[in-house]
Length: 527
Image 1: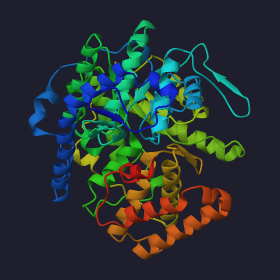
Image 2: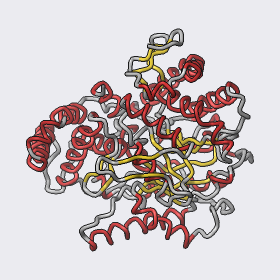
Image 3: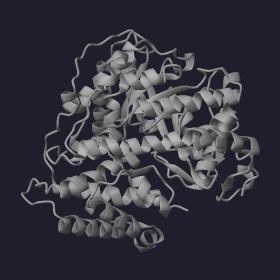
Image 4: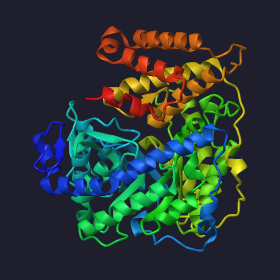
């Protein structure tokens, strides 16, 4: 139901949601959707066309038609004061407790995530809008079932919001009979309810933009921003965004993305896990581009180090900040030796980033904030490294250099275990899951399932000499499913959705074609 003509809301309208889904807010979102959804559809079709060319044997490259943009001397519009120092950012979903803990974690910024670390249930998407509104107004609090109270500290992180990517719909909001683009819904509701309040507080509406595959998609976002600001009487250039470079396509169009969003952009970010996934998926027809065990593919690999360096060089040339990638580790409280090893890995990773030229980095757990801060505080005493310019001379071949290494039974088993565990949580409404001392989100689950698909598709040889076959994959899925049951017990297993998750993993891993997104294939399983 909806009071706005042409808009149907099929999700439950709880009393608290009525303050988010106001008539004016719905009209604002509907206006943006009606103007921009046809272009969004065209760009999603363009993705398919470009992929067909890669499947036919071409490789991604820097665009000849935008050479003048890459060689020009233009700069972005500028960076607000509260985004000048972003040395450590924490990320997480938009549930109430997480929002409070993340804002209090001691990081410079908190990316509140409607995308990869959130399962897009109707309740979480709407509750998330309420939680962020309350956080902006400093009225947010939470009391746990055990009676523990959570509230904001006096000093908190700067809030940045990540809406869903262009490929995702919001099936509970139909505009003229079609599902609304999830990204416009997330952006529009947050912007409508919070932009004016944020400006009064000396901050602004800040966003992270995910999974873009071309500068044309950046141009579309920019058009949405211009229209949104005009509709609410807010000056152009008020919205400030950071774009995640997490597709292989986008790595070849960093300059162009910055240019299209130059009035609104402040930074690019190395979305490393999605980037690895994108490399596998984009090059899925190139059987010689095989990726070894996931945990052996670190940022020291040539293709990833080149991607990091190119991002730093490109951003600083344009006056934009270069953000590093996620440390997904979780502190290990009951084993000091293992915990020390985790901290050492995180420190080494962050040292590589700051030396490459990054102005900040990400962590997934509050316990890693001090570890990352220590590295950046030591090696970046200023708020950022924008004054440093680089000439890394990164070529297309550097971005496309195949990582070499072993493919093991342990790697196959871990991918399947993580795939089942993550999908089970996701279709159950939880998009951020601790597994094996790592915080897994959709990006890492995507690596897991595309690696299994790739290894099976091209008959990878395991380190013990066996070939990856369909029988081996299905047998391993059955074994890992049984392991979950034995580990968790009958009650938790049967209350959960492990069999459904294993079925999704089996179908996607053994399909003839590599599916675009795990989340798209699983969305219909959500209420």
